[in-house]
Length: 180
Image (cartoon, rainbow, N blue to C red):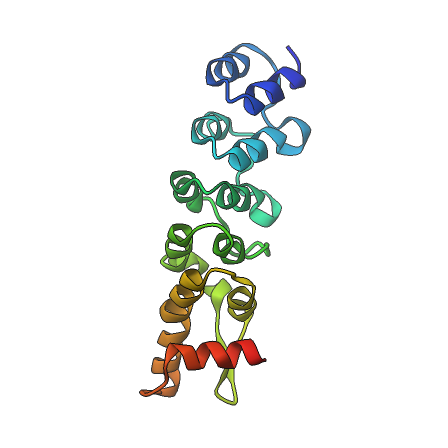
């Protein structure tokens, strides 16, 4: 058996064949720069991801947390929640909330409730106007529902807490952000 047969088992979601290859061959599951793990995450194939993670030389915490980002793109909520425990926020990586905001409100909610990722969404204020990576996410999001959720969950909390603003509406915050 070769690395190609391992790739084919992942691509076709053939869990029986994947298990057989992993148990009976000397093929490294990290073959081809963790292609198998990345592809399984991209496919949202939680069973294949579990099989691959069970091998110690498969690196879930690889640079840029790519498997996690690919799982978000797949939209598989269970897979995202499973991989969340492996995410290392100290590794600089593509913002997962940015990716989630393009795909799923449910995944946005999961990410905004995860304490280890809060630093990524750090909001700073300059002259009463919010700054930080979260603003790019809000601007790039095409879903009004997701945009409103992020603003209510993150920015409103900061405004009320830091600035004691009592009479500002979410729509006014949206306008401030989109005008910048």
